[in-house]
Image (cartoon, rainbow, N blue to C red):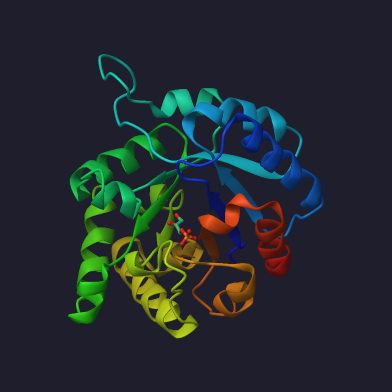
Length: 251
Ligand code: 13P
């Protein structure tokens, strides 16, 4: 009932040539895949070129961030309108690197999620606990707070635009993937919470991705869980072979 959704977060990687090569490689390799939604999220400066390279493909374009105002004196920021203008459908918001390196708060992330939905973008809204929070037995509390705060003020109809991405911070870029059981356990908790916030029907329709060292060799195991609806892929999304293999495994 929920169509799987695999997104590649290229983070601050690639250059112009590499971004185009990755896009055209994926377009070739994934032609005809229609049972999985696929998106790539390049750095802002390559969005337009990657979007052009992906035209008439089944791969959607996403950005890695936005600013919640529509335009004006916000030097260095990029609005949702601008992202729509260059062909984005999705935007990653609340990524742990933005929370922990760039200091984004739940309140700011909530403004961004609302701005994205209002502007017709589909947010990939990221949550996840630090290693010390997991070890202190606080995973549920931390993730619940992030979900509640990040989605505050959003009604059930608009919540349907949101994909939640559970990315345990200790699993990102470390090669240390959450086990399938750890992922499923938190995903089920998130879905129950979405049910409290938006009703069981909406919660059943919302997709929850897992992210954190997702690779071709653990894709099937992660995706076999009933509440894991897709993957948000970092490192492995920078290699055509790896990302295509992951999508094909799910397809
Ligand atoms: P890795 O797949 O490199 O661990 O990154 C995950 C991630 O942060 C995706 O947003």
